[in-house]
Image (cartoon, rainbow, N blue to C red):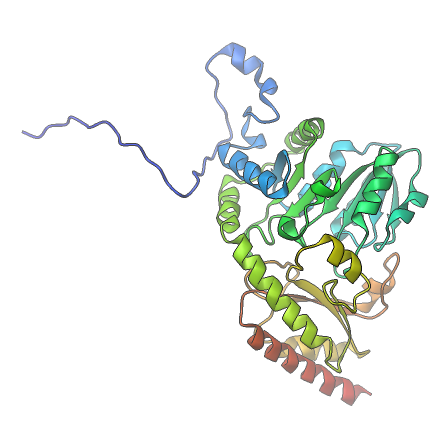
Length: 387
């Protein structure tokens, strides 16, 4: 006769974090249910503010950033928007770097401006002179270092010093350097934003953003905004980011070294007019980068010799190792193109020429250089025929 007596379950431990999915959070009593909002900003009242999986990721990112608090959102873009929406109101003045992420500028101009927010773009390479832009109603300064695509280096400590004297909040998109190269909170920035889609995840298979900060009041406000705007992050994606964080340091080191090697080689190529990369001594932002940053990430841009559109098509068509895509920070190398009209129409334009942006992955640097040289050869041949 078979016995159905079951042994007590054994303790279970795993190196992998648990993935806890939930929409509805249940309570032990009516009293707990009616007071559920008091559980925030750390606790659980409904799935929209996250499960223990999200909290574990938030704690790990806060530690990495050197901060006290973190809120994860569904994308880097949503992290930027959620931060602004937490504090900026009608009648406020918002300062945004002209080299900030394009969606943030579009959001400011096409949405916030219609809500009576005064939006002003400032020069991406600014420092203490930002004081000339400060008004009595200035609420927040949005920064990115270096700038998206064009790679200008603002003087973050100088901007923060001005902002603090005037009681203005600061937030910085730190995705390029990550906390491994620069910790905005340690330089007095109020909010450090990362597109965890990029380096943190590392494999181009998820969308997550994060907002790190020290001030408990700011944390409560951001968590409330996350909840009200429905910016819940999938626990499965949180798990993937935590898995990516396990290899972040080794990936970042390898990609940074390869990127510097490739950028230095391209700097001397006859078809390259300029390499936009603060880690190069020839870059206008080098002194600030050297002073504040400990590494250089995997992203840089190129201004090639003046040429017709057909030459740029030839360059990209010749690439075999670089995929064409707008994101970056993953293990696979990517190339993106930003046409001349976009540069000429930008506030505080760096150039009126097209820009090619490269993200260096974990492939062999020699192989990537050979691929880029083949692309530049195709560019040269097509440019020669056109001229």
